[in-house]
Length: 294
Ligand SMILES: CSC[C@H]1O[C@H](OP(=O)(O)O)[C@H](O)[C@@H]1O
Ligand SMILES: Nc1ncnc2[nH]cnc12
Image (cartoon, rainbow, N blue to C red; front, side, top):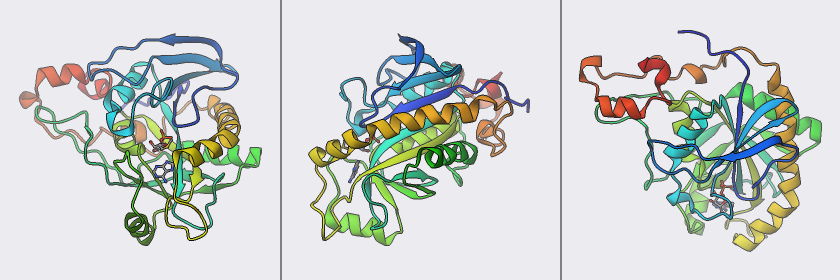
C-alpha cells in the first residue's frame, strides 16, 4: 500500500470543558456534509503555529447533545473528509484509582466498551470489515501528548484503561466497584465507539482524559455531580488548551505514515468479495475507505 505520509492534519474533538482552541489563526467555521447524517456541529478550521488544525466540539456548541445522542459516525466521517490524519480526543472522566486525583491527565491506551445504544461501525451488510482494536490508540500521538504534558508540568499518567459506559446517568456504587475490580483507571461516556470508528477510518486516535472526580466509590469523596465536574473543568480548561497548543509543534515535522499501522487499518480488514459488495454502502464509504475502494 502507498505510504500516506505528508503534512499531518490534527483534529481535536473537544469534550466537556474544551469548547475552543487557544491561538488558532485563520479560523472559519464550516459545514461539512456527511452521508452518515448530521455531525455534532460545523468544523472549526484554522492553523496553530502553521500547523493545520480542525476542531469539533463533541457535544456541539453549548453542549446540546448527550453521549448516546451523538452521531459518532458522522463526526468521524467529517473529520476524514476534512483531511484529518490524527485525532486528539479530549475528555472529562471520573477516576477509578486513588492515585489518579482530579486534575490528573491520563493518556489512555486501552478501553472497555460497555456502550450498547450506539452505531459502532461504518461497515455492515454489503461490505463486512473487521479491524484490529488490540491497540486502540496511536502510540506516536501518545508520545507527542506525553512530551507535551512533561513540558507543561501537567500531572499525567502514560497509559490507562478507560471504561466507556452508556450513561447519561452516572454509575451505581456496585458498578463503580466492579470496574475498579477489573483494573480500569478512568470512566467516561464518549470515547466508544469514537475510537473504533477512527480506526475504521484509518485516523490515528489518542485520548487525553482529564480527571474531574472520583466517581462514587471513594469513601472520602462525595459521589460525582455535574456541578463538581464543571468546577474542576473550569480549573483545568486552561491546561487542556495549553496541551493542545503544545502538541501541534511535536507533529508538524512528521512526514511519514504512522508506523503503528493506524493509517493502514483496513489493509487486511475487508472480507466481502468484490462481486458481493453493495454499491450504495461503498458510495457512503467514499471518505472512510476511499483508499481501499479506489
Ligand atoms: C460533563 S459530565 C459527563 C460527560 O463528560 C464527559 O464527556 P466528554 O468525554 O465529551 O468530555 C463524559 O463522558 C460525559 O459525557
Ligand atoms: N464519574 C464519571 N462517570 C462518567 N462520566 C464522567 N465524566 C466525568 N466524570 C465522570
